[in-house]
Image (cartoon, rainbow, N blue to C red; front, top):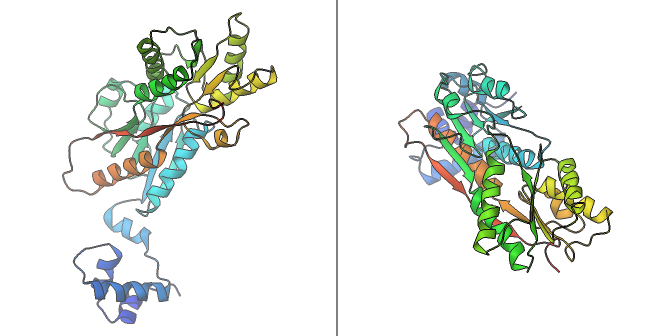
Length: 333
């Protein structure tokens, strides 16, 4: 039979209430008592009945993560870290994919799944501030990625402008002067692309340079990067350095360069953004901007936990996740 709280209490020689206090992390338990209870838990292989606990608290023990596209490795890697962070709270993560579609994103924030989840981590693309302000569902929500205007919601993101400026400055410091970008988008909701373009242009302006070329894409996939790089090479004035707005674009661009006999980085230096695992194992390995995905996931889950604590919490938090430049073979001679 599965050991019960009562069995642990008898084994440790303490009350059921004391065992409950230890399991739930209450601080007012002496060190010796806590050690004794934890030893009994280990010996009996006791596991808390989270379903019963959540039922008593009126909770499901499930949170949701809604992202645009899990085929983009950044979101898949972020989802893995969210699951790890949620597990420390005893939560299960329901993952939803919106494809950046407005109707799907409205469904996410409408509360239609509110009976299933306790809280929501959401990376929107198509919604506006008015959409979020009109939301009637009271399920706690934390925004990831670019803010949809100003809203009274917790939010964590990378400073895309500063990070893109760092990537572009790295290319300029290599002595490259025909610096191009791949990843601009014309969609009004493409905030990530717009911010990274601003950072790219800012770095060039600081060096008294102008963009050699800016290639527009529909999506941030490998095929988009490959096609955009082909256009740049066929323009009659190819770049000597390219900043791609994410790593999958960069990997597609890298394939085009190598298939056409262009040496990387000797002829064209290349840098991406996101530090996905594939970039570490490409040949040559991909220089990139690495947002701290673990920090983003843990901070988002902690913000959600604060809102679920049931006590008046702090005002909505605006957090900026750290990032760093990783120099690998595509920019290192």
